[in-house]
Length: 530
Image (cartoon, rainbow, N blue to C red; front, side):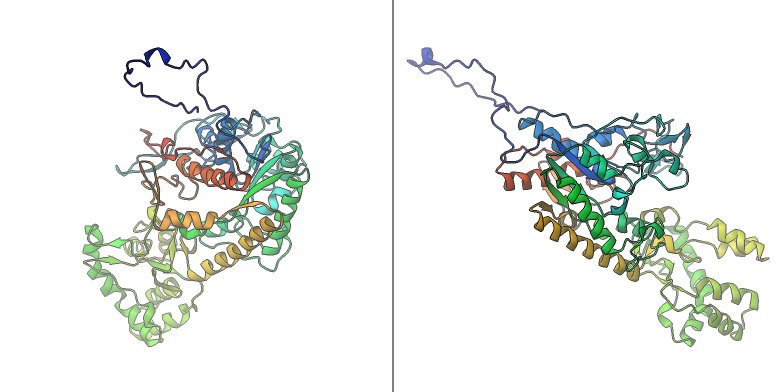
């Protein structure tokens, strides 16, 4: 991208017409922009999916081309940096990965009209062509590895293709690892960076969050080899890994920039689906069922009151929004007590047992609960697994169907809701990680980008840019892609600008920012979906 200066020719004034200056050279960016005291001759970016340019649930070429490191490198070039910024590009724009011809990750999401006839995210159809067994030869400047946690970057063999089928290695890193025993940070450091960026740690808590808290908070466990894929990393493990990565990247005298970690409540994956998603004003079928539902739950609510738990009562509103029903594993399990009280109230033993088991740890969702994005597709739908289970118990199909409606008669399961206790674990880890990042950035004189504050501003008030406002509103906000977690190209452009502005300030540089409105957001496609 080259900036040009446009001059408006003024009418010649008598006596000066013969004195017009002649420009022999075109006015270009050369000499206008500069990198100040920063040595950007070999920029290396280390991190996870946010560094790689992951978006819409996949890694694909146009997303990589709009990764924040690649955008930054393009602006460095305008300031005179001539070194090429290399990335381990995918083979296509579909995004799926193959292992020996078999697809192992899904294609990207696009916005299209799905089977319901309404626009929404659907998986882009097509046969991907990126096979991880066809390795790439580095070194690469973009060392972003989707799915990587902090300790993964330092783990030997994380890019061993043989370990991918059993979950012992990362398929993205397997494509471009220098060997079967190499480490991501080792490969990054071997490129001898003159300047680096590091953004890691999101996945150390994010996988716990996106799974609805199905993992374990491993705080106090210092052995990451024992962690499950959705567990929260111990802060000391994170600190050790992070410090080691900075040491490796700075071994040759490189300077750099680091990013801290955002709050999960700033991304649409956790803010799009409201806790009171059952709206009788817009859903006539639900509105018609409310009287029957309230009558059905009346004995259960009486039992809750008898047990001193009236706050667990289940009621629905026929004229407004109603909260969905969730399972809260932090509650005392009243299954046995409910069953006995219901039997004592005259309900038959079989039905009382089902009610007791089904609602022993249930409650209405509140605004303190975060429903994950995938819950939007299952609320109000039949839970087939529960239906089949009830039928196997001898429950008539009609009754089983009535008791198997997600979020209404069957409480939303753990993977669809982040309850307050789970959020507290996430927030504690986030605060601990960010403290480590801040302290190490200060100790090593590194630029620190407060991604937590910046993304919170996008979520709370929006960020104005030339021609619009960037918000975290799902689909329409412009900042986040269809997976609800990763930025769009426009969002990545905003991140790149944050880094460039900070670099200009620290190094006395004059590196141009980008016009984020020139970058795309989500992709609308005529794909029919699946």
